[in-house]
Image (tube, rainbow, N blue to C red; front, side, top):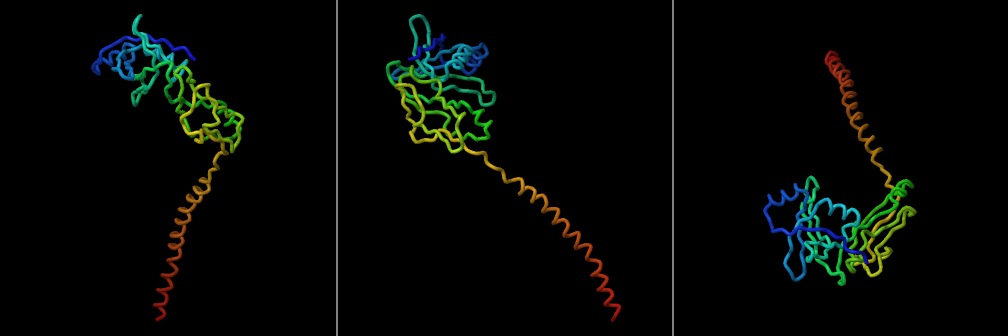
Length: 228
């Protein structure tokens, strides 16, 4: 079981939007934690410290949120709110967990060997980005890895094919397709486009031909009148 990652937090009162923006400018990230049978806890943490912990350990990590020497919480990230345009972090919500009680989490699927597959001229069709897993918080992997470098067209991977850590089970249906390998689709649009470009030229030539043929017909009609 992985050891919880320690993060120092600063308790805070639920503040205004201006107060939250000031926290962000000072390098902190507003946060809260929900707990079963208890009130939500509001606090802030250093944004850069939290970012490094996520990069190194993943979203499914278990954190020890240390408020002071006597107060700490064991929790997992439940939601990370981002700004729509910039993508900057606005707020993080944690969920209190017990290391001895099973919980659930959405764990990302990490594809390995994608470049080898593309180099071989094949196409990867990924159907699932995350898996819904159940287990003890400390047993969750940072990601579920799938190696595709040696796969060929027609090969596929279902949830049942995945190797999960001991004690962790998938709640996603076993028959669900995770990914498949196929030949690249052959484009047939170019001939159709060429035909479409030729058509206007042909249509434009027809009126020109009709205009050239018009004068002889007019002369023949005048000549008939003279004959009378």
